[in-house]
Image (tube, rainbow over all chains, first blue to last red; front, top):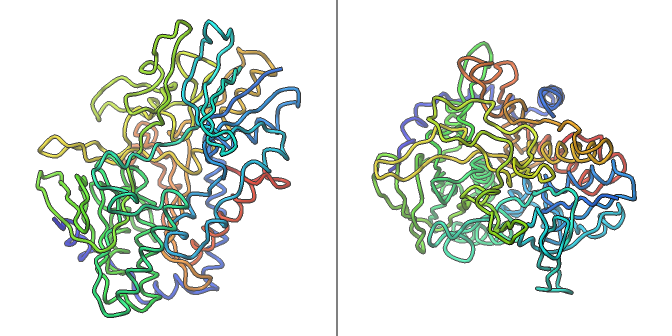
Length: 48
Length: 485
């Protein structure tokens, strides 16, 4: 039974601006740096 | 002189072996026993499965690396553990059977002072009749499986190019599977390939999962703070499914796979069928078939291993209701409670319970993801066991064990949703801790600041960067140990 379709159809969808932002090379270069900082912070948090 | 034997050379075992060899003096011996001749960066098998990478880009032969590092390598399968030795051996030992073609099926016994069990999973296709590449579906669990999946996918795309509509089903092949993240990745990589091939309009893509809802990923879902709002991984994931036109069936246990038809049961007890032209369904995991015996030769397998074949470690395995589960139930040191010189790490250790809330169908069928313990946590566990063993060899057997609980460990997960330097995309997620701790973080069980999700091209670059970095690290190139697990 296709029991997730209704939820998927009513899920919020990214605006055209956000969709462009997700593929914009300059903006994504910034996100690449920011995400790496976040990941490194995560790695050194807690027991490891 | 001490000898440390590592069973398995996946992410966990290989990490442990490299760190032990780096730390221990050369008069100590590090031995790796693994049935495979090659190391595999499994997260990139997804890209092999859609034809965007070759198998030699995600694997390399282990023997030259181990020879260069001074690690003794046996390409063999561990069959028996004798942690108390036997009448013939005063020391503990492990029995092995060679898979190395030059010694095929010969047996041997290797004594040890310390043992790390990092044997990973047995891919339990047999749990679901008709499941797997030898039957009616494909898999991306190994490079060979991924190549097969890629060929089958190419066949489906060729049919679509001739105008023939195709039904593609991707997901998990049993109610207790783990690695939903990998199935999610493969779904969106396939969808990306269909668009690239110009045949998306002729494909019905369905994600079939045992998760209670989308975005669960076997970790009970996540709550994100994003742009001033609180959202959930459920909404976030559903949004991606909506954008990419992918259907989903959740709460499903695949009962059997016949040619072109999947039979599955859902939590409401309903029994359904789903027709397909292409199906990639991941298998459930169980522990490898490793037996254990005491000094008298009595079978003690059930004392060292849980019924699912995974090794019992320093976790709280007492049966209790979901509401009473605690973060501290999860293991810290990965030591066997019975033998302090034996460790179980990576997928090989038995989790005390699921992370997602357990559920059974009205027919009594368990439909709940098993806890993921691959990738980053796996590497950290391998290193933790290696550090403990190093300290004990150096300072004596009473040296305090190092700790790395999944309930106090963060994880970063980058789920590819399509490749390409400028057209690629991925869902990047971080969570802290992996196992929710409701005492420390009331409400969601995780730190709101450190639990996060974002979709975009940058995620694809990170996924590719991780591929390059971890292949480099696993090859033990200069400075490898500076790359975190």
